[in-house]
Length: 261
Ligand code: PGA
Image 1 (tube, helix red, strand yellow):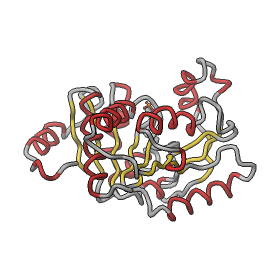
Image 2: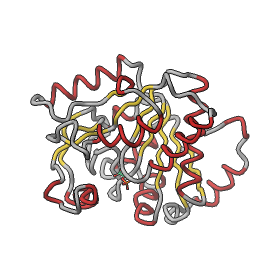
Image 3: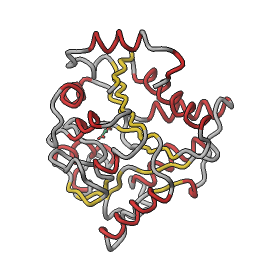
């Protein structure tokens, strides 16, 4: 995989937004897989700025959700559908019709998972999947020991993830759902390009395990090693545990400009 070490989160966001813009120039109706959490926000901000300046046209793009809480009504402000509406669709000027996501409030959760897999398939698959990483190495909501072949399904959040996400629920862990629907690791690996962004020292150990450790279900993001086109963008703090950091810096510095991410 390619590892790009950037000075800060803003630079990482701009780099990934440029990669998305290149994709959309090539394929205006591309399916963008989007992630929630704090890390991807600089990507969405940079992309929205490019839309405003006319540098990219997103009007035909489609946006696919990675994961969703189970049991929150779709219009709950912290459902990921609502969050992505605020953080991605609105700033990019996209209609709700452009959005693909599982129904977290469905009474039949397995059917909702199957329907989402079918919807992704019908859309032609995800062209570029943006990922964050949990401090435990999760991608999407695939917690440690998730099957590397998993498809969209229900998962139970670890206590640590619920603690991490309590900040979106008035700091009250009791309000954080226990269950989620998440694209499986096998689903994520079907996207044509995976771009993982990690910033801050709290992610350094998970990044090092994912990039330089063995492929292992105990560290779900290590599955990126199995993908033919995976890009990991990290700031200096998140890169702190990488033994090959100098090699990654050299490789990126010598990369031909035409290549993009
Ligand atoms: P964060 O979440 O970007 O808010 O740290 C990442 C994740 O849990 O995948």
